[in-house]
Figure 1: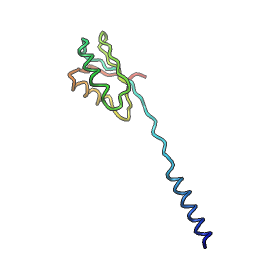
Figure 2: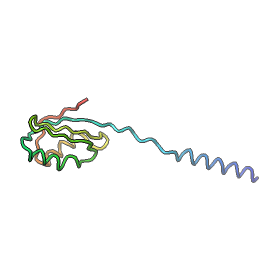
Figure 3: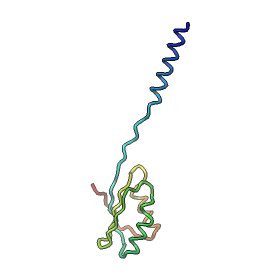
Figure 4: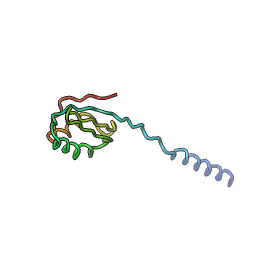
Length: 102
């Protein structure tokens, strides 16, 4: 009887360890989007740098004032192009178009 109880206990431990194995995280999909905006000065550029990098999932922000573009790299699981467009609107920067880079 003790042997049967020991075997059942061992099986319960093995089953518990097998189900408690850590699950692999989903792969992060980093997306790069180039926003064409209406920025035209260093002040507008600074508004972008003070706001957009603090949105969820943002990895990198680059502003090019002469071409009026803002390049944003972000985790697609945490943010979207539409959400970022709204973030630009909240700081009074108009997005004329957005294009995903590959």
